[in-house]
Image 1 (cartoon, one colour):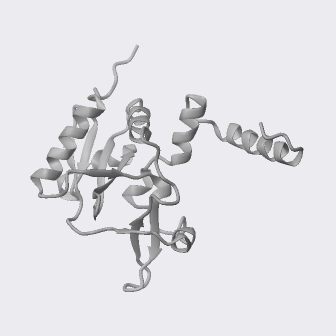
Image 2 (cartoon, one colour):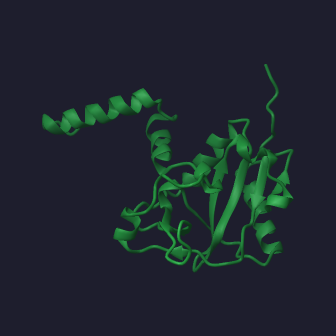
Image 3 (cartoon, helix red, strand yellow):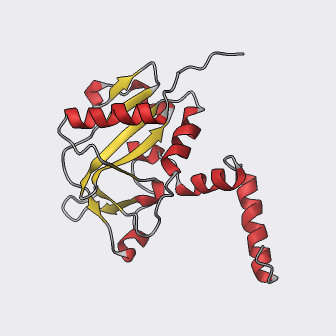
Length: 193
C-alpha cells in the first residue's frame, strides 16, 4: 500500500487557515463559495480580446454541502488543491476550490501561498470587486469555451456535486450518456421515473 502524497487536514482546519490568510491581507474573511456553473465570463467592452469575470448564484445555486463534497473528492487525489479568491462582493470574498497538478509549480511569485504538507495552496487574489450577475441573459450568453485557460477552469462543477450526491461517486462519460438517453426515453414514453 502506498503512502498518500499529502496529508489533508479536516475541512474546518483548512478553512480556518484560509480565512486567516485573507484576514492577514485585510480581505473579507467571510466566504461565498461558487462552482464552475456560477462563473460568468464575458467579453470585455473596455479591452478588445480580453474577458471580464463575474459570478451568479441566482440561476444555479450551490447546495449547502457542495464545498464539503468538493473538498473530500479533491482530497482523495494526489493533485494540489487551491483555495482561490476571485474578488470581493457584498457577501464577502467570492471563492472557489480548485484542484489539478498544474498548480504544483505555482508559488509566491504567482500569488500563491503554498502549504506543502497539506498539498494545498491559497490564492488570495486582488483586493478588487467582482460583479454579481443577476441578468439571466448575460449568464446564458456567457463565454464557455474558445478562450485561454485560466486558473478557475479547474473548479468542480455543480453537476459533479449532484452525481456524487445521487450515485455516491463521479460518473464515467458512458454512464452520463446512458443516463441522458434513459431520461429522454422516459419522457418520450411518459414514465417520469
